[in-house]
Image (cartoon, rainbow, N blue to C red):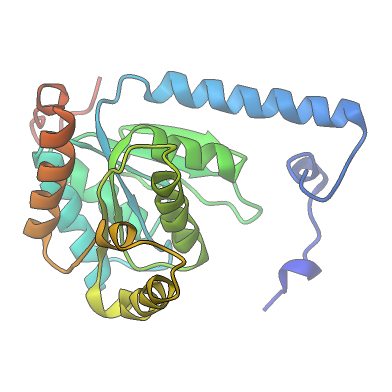
Length: 248
């Protein structure tokens, strides 16, 4: 297997690798322009999607696996509540969430990242936006969501989980509900979080804001209580569409 440090970066992608130290100022200016353009494109594409729930999880989980089918059912239930379901737009858990939303007649949204090894948008998207920069993509996945559902995943999923928790902890976003689905999978991480709590590194209220469950109904009830009722967004939720009908 090729190590990341052994890969040759194509010339067309080098412009997006800008975290390796200072560069010529004209190159930095081009980067700023590209970042601004991505932010603008994301804001324009997503401004009218309505309240969303963002689902995070691995791209490596295949259809038919338990986590895939649980995600699909969860997204369908959230869509029936009137939420748009937003993901990173790729395969695996992302596909399962978009698929569940689409099958339930809800709005399915993907913020796809362009990678060295192409990540193609999954085929279940009503709204799809492509990004070069991970941090711009994460802005979009957070900005338009009233809840976060985190399925089993790897580095990227952990990064997205802790991004949301840090933004909540520091008051940069409201304390929207965060749900971890898969009690067995997340138990080792919860052990580490309990260690952080015992060492005084986080507070009880920060740990208490996590719901850990395997039940779709528990997710819906939690989101309804801590997002719909609390932020009074019921009138802004979309009624589900007829199956097969596409968003305008």
